[in-house]
Image 1: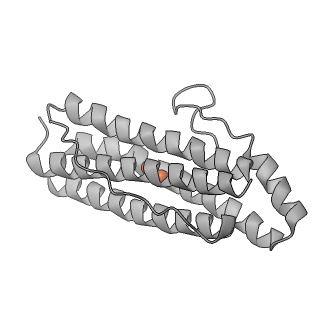
Image 2 (image 1 turned 180 degrees about the vertical axis):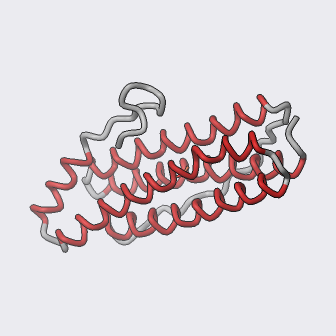
Length: 174
Ligand code: FEO
């Protein structure tokens, strides 16, 4: 059975992952409103990824004999400064999430919960991948530097992203 401290902290992370999903859905809608449907698609896939992160926690809390408590999810922002502003906000958000995951790992260690620590290692790797993906897109956006043709090319590329749950043949690749 999971300890109360880690159970509460994992519940907090479940809420944070659902907030992330809601944030990226909000970004998707914002980018669609700029007629950047490829960027909108990328964020919509990100919304699905974050729901997967949340549900993985949901299943784990139950598997360990804990109880999931569904708390209110904060409302995300609705406006950014174009695609660069949205991806800068995404990078800042993911850095914050990485900090939250690291804190969970330290807590699992303090609680001498080896199984919890192993479970959380999946999130540690996932954060590295997410940060890299966002940095790559942000790098391309900065290179494009407001050039509409280059922006549309990136939009086209991001429009090809398809959600694959991690664990399936292509899952986890973005
Ligand atoms: Fe669930 Fe984007 O980290």
